[in-house]
Image (spheres, rainbow, N blue to C red):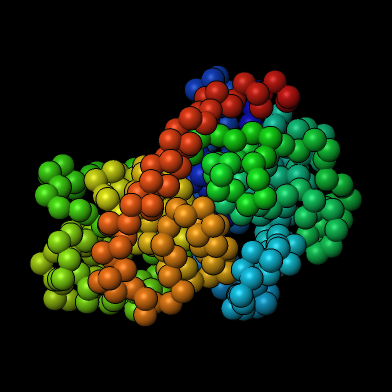
Length: 371
C-alpha cells in the first residue's frame, strides 16, 4: 500500500507525522511525504519527500499570511478558545495559495491512503479526487475537524476543485484524551517525540548535579520574539540552585551569562529534556507534548493566538504554570515550577496516560484495514 503524508509546510506540522510514517514503512508499506518550506527536513528522517513549492521558506509563507490575513494575528481577548474557534475556518483558508501545487503532486503519487494535517485542507482534496480514504493526523491539543472544510471560507479549496469532504474521515489524536480540546477522537495514539537527529554534546552525558531547566521558544520568529523572557530568566537564574540551558542557538545567546546558565546549538529537544526537571517555553504543540511524554514540568509563556489556546488547555488540566505576561517570569515563579507538588502529580499522571496509549505501530493495522 502507498501512503501519502501531507503536512502543512512547516517543521511543527511535519515532524509530528514522522513516527506514524516510520510505522507504516516498518510494516512494509510505501510512504511518501508531499510538503514544502522547512518541513522538507523530514527527508533527514529517512523518508522520501516531494517539494510542492520550491524556493519558498516557511518564514516567507508566514509573512504572506500576516500580509494577506492580518486578522489571524490580532491579539486574542479573554476567551482564547472561543475566539480561536471563530478563526479556525480562516486559518484553514489562509493556506489556500499553496493547496493546488500540493494537490498536483499528491495526485502524481497515486496513494491508497492519505494522512493529512487537519489545518491544511489539501489532504481531503486529494482523497476526494482520487476516491481513496483520508485520515486526519492531529498536531497537538487544538481540534481542527473535517467539518471546517464543508462551508466557506474553509471550503474554498474543496469548492475550487469541485469535490466535497469525503465521508468517514477518522482523526488520530496525538494529545492524550484528558488534554485534547473537545474530548478524544476515534483513535488516540501515543505521542512519540521526533525532533530531528544530531550529534549529542558531551555535557548531556554528564551527571545532573542539580535540577536542569530547559528554555526554548520554538522555531519561528527567532530569538527576538522572546528576548524579554530570556532576559527575565537570566536575571532570576543566579538566585536559584538550578542549571539553565538556553536552547536558542549559541550565536543568539546574550553576553555575560550567569555561571549556572549555558547555551546550546541544535540538540533534539527530546534528548535535551530527558535530563531536565522542567522547561520554560512558548506553548508550541511539539514542545508541550514532548515535555508531557517525558514527565517534565512546564512553565509556559504563550505569545501567539494558538499558543494562548494551548495555554488555556494546559491550565485547565493543571499540567503547566501558564503566565499572563513576561513580568510574571521571576525567581518566585521558577521556584514554584520546581517545588509545586500538585504540578508534579499531574505531570506524572499525564506521562503515564501517554505511555498507556497505543503506539504508532499498533495504530497502523487499523488504518491499513480501512484503505
